[in-house]
Amino acid sequence: MSARDRIEETAAAWLVRQEDPAWTGADQAELQEWLDRSMAHKAAYWRLEHGWRQADRISALGGGVRPAVGPNWSSRPILALAASLIAALALGVVLLVQAGSSTGSAQPDAAVRQAVTPVGGQRRLALADGSRVELNTDTDLRYAIGRERREIWLERGEAFFEVARAPGLPFVVHAGPRTVTVLGTRFSVRREGDRVSVAVLEGRVRVDEDADPAPGRSATLVGGDLAIAQGTSTLLTGNSAERVHDALGWRRGMLIFSQSTLADAVAEFNRYNRVQLIVADPAAAEIRIGGSFHAGNARAFARLLRDAYGLRLKEQDGSILISS
Image (tube, rainbow, N blue to C red; front, side, top):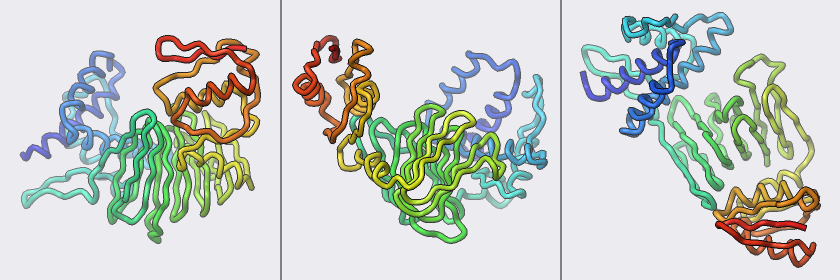
C-alpha cells in the first residue's frame, strides 16, 4: 500500500469514528494532531469530509448511501466505507477518493489547496479554469479547480470571485450552512460563523441552504442584489447596485458607510486592523456615520471621530477606547 493510500484510509477511518456517539474532546484533539502533521492529511480528510456531507444530503432525499456506524466502529472494515462512498459517486457525488486496484491507483482531478490572508492583508489568486479570486482581510479558503469540478470552501472571511464561464461545470462556493452556485459571474461571499452575505456585481447566482436543499429554500440573485443568510432565514435586497458597490469597497482598500451606527463601523474597522477600536458607551455607539475611509488606518478614523463629533479617545493595551 502506498503512503497516499494509507493517508486516505486513515482519513476515512477518522470520518467513521466521528460518527460514534462516544466521540470525546480527547478524540477531537487526537484528530487535530493528525491533521496538523501534514497538508496531505488535511487534503485527504477535507476531500472525504465533503463527500461525506454530500452523501448525507443524498441520503436525506432517499439515496441511503451513508453507512451505519455504531460504537464498534473499529471492527467495521474501511472497505465498507469505501463501498458506500463509491455508491455516492454513482449518484453523482464528486469525490476525490482513491479506489485502488491491482494495476494502480486513481488520480484526483484536482488537488485541494489552501489560501489565507492575515488581518489587514489581501491576496489575489488566478485559478486553473481562468477564474480569479480576491481574498479580503483575515480570510481562509480552500479550493479545488479541475476538469470535473470547481469548488471553493470559505472557512472564514470574505472573497470576491470573477468566474470564467464553463458550460455544464458550475462554480460552487461552500460557506458554512450555505452553498453558492454559479456558471459565470462576479460576486463576493462573506462568512462570519453561520452568517453568510452574498453581493452580486453582475451575472446570476443561486444560494442554497445545505440543511434543506429543496427548491423553496433557495434564493436566486442577479447583478445589484445583496443577500444575508443566517440560520433558516435569508434576507434578499434587490436592485441595490450602489450598496453592492459600497460592500465591495474593500477591493479598493476602502470602507464605505451610509448612515451606519458607530458600533457597526467600528466592527468593520476591527476586521482590518491589529489596533482594535472599542466604543465605551451606548450613546456613542448609536452615532450615525457616513463617508469613505481607508480600511487599514484605525487611528486616523478615530481622530476623525474626535474632530467631527467631539468624542474622547484613550489608547491602552493596543486598543483605542471611544467615548462621548
